[in-house]
Length: 443
Image (tube, helix red, strand yellow):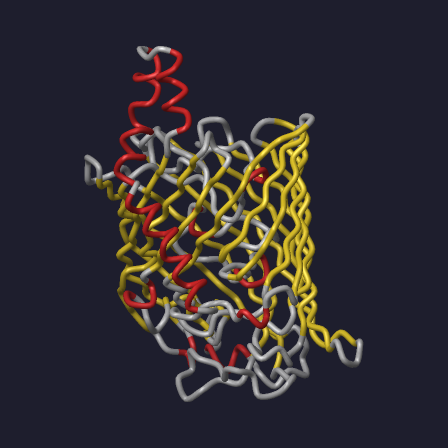
């Protein structure tokens, strides 16, 4: 990325954050103020900037039994440390979404998470990039059709919502099969009634470190489309397809990925009941020879419900994971990959239960304690695999226990991964009790 592009991105981000206090105050008092204003004052208010900011961090302590190498480990760090902002100008015709992520500082070695993989980490979730998202969107409508054009760095229109806005602290194993994020992209979206269509071109290269920026030379070598329909309020179905060129070889000489995703999602009007079912499949293809080399499949179902002030959530997952050559550190794999082979494909099954308690901190900053328990099993998908999970993890199945507290400042964001006309009508998942702030918005 050129210095000029970096300067432009920084300028947009600084502008959004600088206006945040004004936007937060405006969002809190808009309904009350509008009732007493004359029409010309209301017009001025409508054209003013509206900026919302949310900050969060999750101090966690995780115990993983029978993790990599059969070890029992207990670790603590600050997970999901992020500041998210959305700004709206010109009567909503221009929006900017920005997310800064500090995980490169707070959990540089990755978050202990047996079964996880991606970006050179294995059995750990990798830290996300410092500049997680910066997207500018122009929005309009004509003849009853809404349209938008978005550009910057962010979420490709593929698959399901980012796990950061879902009811679990631990990410699902399928994170790299079910979402495509932190890419330089240009996308368009159309909306007609309950139907939405998105299409994007982007650079296929994955980040290689928290400070990575998309390679300008890779922009436009990959593409994705997603169709979404909302037949009833709160009920949503999506199907998407993507072709990603050489995500793990930044120079562009690696295997391409052909990705598919189908999902259904339900969220009640008050956000207190949530269900998600998804299926995703990634095929790694040698483009030069025109042959499929590997395939990985995932099926996931999760749900959450508020029972008074307590949130209960359950997730069931089955996901295939590639087994690549590990470094002397068993939680890291060789990057870039040295060849086009893997030592096996492991089929992971997991069941995760989470309980979230009422806030123990009141005021602008809130804190929600939680407990998560996860039981896992791992088996080779092919008995000829060199990598044998039972030898590596031990004869007993891995399991994890995580305790922590979600710290939040500002109104809860509803979603991550949709922009402009593709924003579905929904509310945040309220699994945290009746005292959750009500001035919420989508992201």
